[in-house]
Length: 92
Image 1 (cartoon, rainbow, N blue to C red):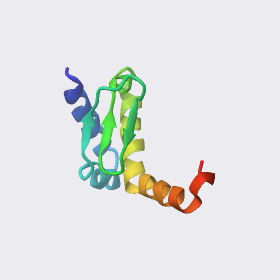
Image 2: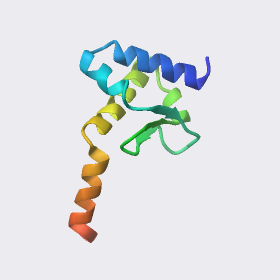
Image 3: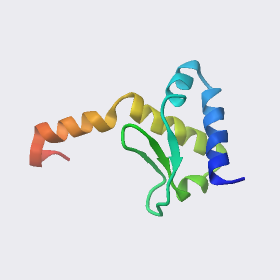
């Protein structure tokens, strides 16, 4: 199974867990990315899944998908950027 097929399967499994999750996961694009340092991340619009993601057991992969989708739904990237702009050098 390719990484794209595995990711697609995991998205379907996550969607089947909850109707609310389905609404989020069907809206947020998910792509594979070549990155040896990270497992998964989001830019606030898309979810990215690197090679390290696929090394985890399938149940954990589904959990990681849900985790990243909630970062998008809760606007963590945008809120973090607004906080960084407001706090300036003190932002951590």
